[in-house]
Length: 507
Image (cartoon, rainbow, N blue to C red; front, side, top):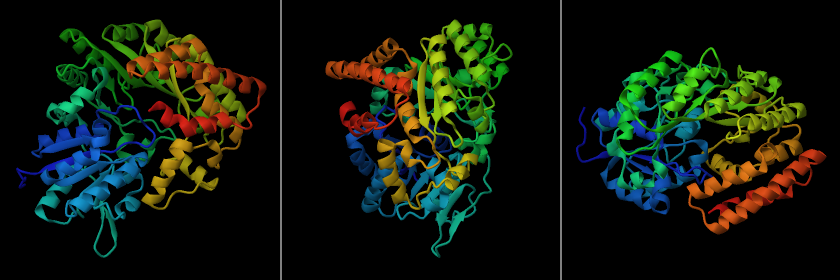
């Protein structure tokens, strides 16, 4: 393989529509960059959340050193991804532009046919992208590369699905040379992501993993290798580790080995990880293990709760019960570990009673685990290839046919979406109010104000923002509870106003 010594692979992370949080370390690109550098390529990563207003200029400056540009792209990143692709094409029309990530994986032909895209990589990108780069360097056709798609000169779309699997256990330690000084300075409180496993063996009917064959199998580092990565990252000065695994606590022996390694090495740090509610039990993560985990810095467990309704949990094949959620909240609280519980709303087949049960269990969990936090209920969104997707299409949901249509929908819906836009939702007024007021309905007002002020302190918001926001928490808490108590969901004017002015107010 002839590697150009004076050229590099440029990897880009565009902004997500309506998301203003600091995504300083996009782990998918850093995993890809780490692997590519381990096999001899030079890699540069630019992140729009770090570069901010200077992103375009930073990309254009790097083009002279690049022989290929890779762009990771969830659907909500398409507006900025296509905008920056246009700038690249205008400045350096001969540089190949490669799209990877969720949108290219879910909509391969649609993405590959866009005039600003030369190739796509579907699913995991390490091996496929490496092999594509080799073909580009050699001036050869990439039709034989598994996981790579493109449109031939005769107009035929080609996607080789015979893809070589990547042994994640062989992933090198995180390549710290990929971190620019600007990236290092931007990491808030030195929170650092690590991914010690990939995939999930469960088959939730709403999840993107069911659409991606590679992700249906759980592949993990052993406890020692996981501890090696932690120790490596801590040398950078990290204080808080977040494990980006789909499911961190799948194997009890692996966790016990990890705990033993951390204890033996005397590593001091705080960390967070995802888990299933049914993993927190006397059979798998009992109180003794939870307390041991807390002693080595485990401070937060993120749990996909999804619903308080047994009916909905069965609909989505979550394979947990509301009792599992209650037990997990109580055990986490007793062990001194904060729980984050994420919920869904607007699932096809959901009833008014299902929604009521979700609100009620959120209230119950907030009492059992006072330090707990909630995400959502977030509006359910269909992923092509998932089982629930076809139900949404049958109900009248229309999938955008082009990248441009997706861009328009993302810019409209992620900022202004209301459940009325989703045809499979029957009780649109109720879903609108509960979706908007979910946390206000479930968490005590005092706790909400405390969490909001912690957020302001963490992100250094102004005193005026803090004061106005505290007042807003009080108002929305009262209005939400009043609407829910009166069973009155019409004329949600405050929802429209909030969504219209949310971004200007929070900037």
